[in-house]
Image (cartoon, rainbow, N blue to C red):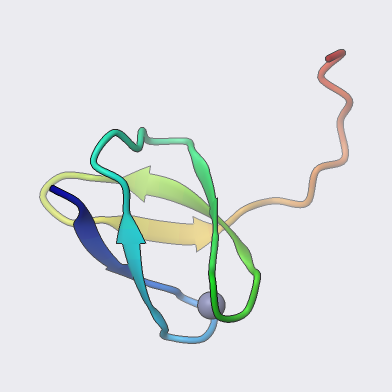
Length: 58
Ligand SMILES: [Zn+2]
């Protein structure tokens, strides 16, 4: 079962995968914004993901 969420940028309805985790970055299908999952329970909270500036040494 997936969870409904809303893009804070464009208000588009998004579906968060059931196995999504807090801290995961998802991309809005509508505006391509990168959004960080802040909370999953009881409601999904999304926030702008910070621009990636650090190299995590991948
Ligand atoms: Zn959006």
